[in-house]
Length: 131
Image (cartoon, rainbow, N blue to C red; front, side, top):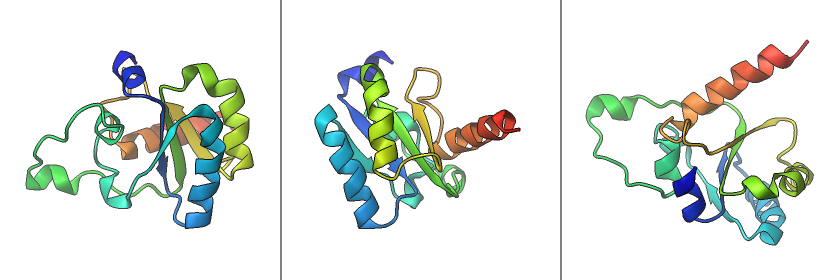
């Protein structure tokens, strides 16, 4: 996650549609000096590294633009915040990004994934853990 840390602290936020919810998450991030990036539904096919500002979006052909899809729920991707997780996760929960919001840390393994792919993987993991 070497590049993610050099890009600063950020949280990519997906599926939060109302301004009140977005502002609550932004307020929760202030003590961590993290930038909030609400991601539009139309950008869910972009890679996490592009959404986090770590690399530029390559030109997409028509087939690549059709891939992606919409995330059916809420998700937060934490970038460069590894050392703050113990305090950050409860703060996010208190701001409305609790149990119903899937959460992940940006890593070198998932940075090339689309937001849609990450959401599907997190949903599978959550389903596998439930009784």
